[in-house]
Image (cartoon, rainbow, N blue to C red; front, side):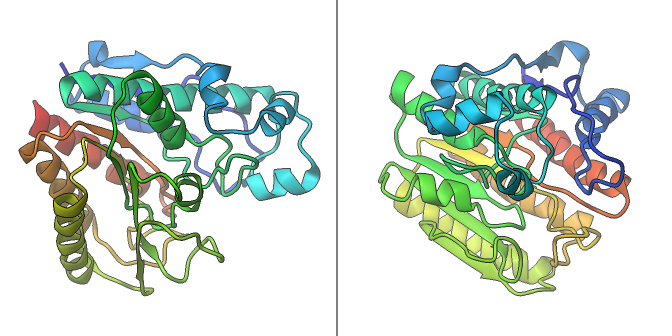
Length: 300
């Protein structure tokens, strides 16, 4: 059975008009249940990740100030969220969702988290709506407790995975691949193992051609034993923050490409959702839900 992990019952309240669509997590879960793509017994509510796991990646001082709501005003602005105990709990549950999905994938081939992809978080600070780096924490746990090596991050969020690039810059067993908008956040980008900077307005055909060739080359040369897929839907033409021009059909073909490559090569795959900020929340939910639906079909 495919398991999907979630933590949408623990959603912090944000100020009115805040541009992060925090309610999307609950709506994705409800949509998948409503259409029958998943059954209730496939959904697992995530608990809070341990401090031990957090400290595999994040500095103790940063973590202590985060959990005691002692971050400076500058740090809070950089993070993009107001400080709250509810937000800290939510972040811990989201990280555990990715770790649980990764451990499930290790044994069953595929694990998914209706959250995660907080790839802008660094060891000593958060930024870009990211407090704790769920993929980095999960990788460090896998390395320490399961001895899995040669881990590939396929980051197809429209924003570069700068936190992951920084964290794993000296780790030869982790390959960071980020395909993102050249003219988008972050302004100062880190150096991934492979960065593909797409021009503003890139549409389906060009995007898919580049991704196909790049992924095949990375898989052949690096030969990963495990893959994390950051499946951001902020590449959609409807996205307010994206600057790319993929259609929903183009997004479908992107996800099918990744999913089929992993399934054919029997590489365990952990999927987390990353960003999505379309003007209509329904477009964001449709894009994320499509990713889960496709994965369910391919791996069932």
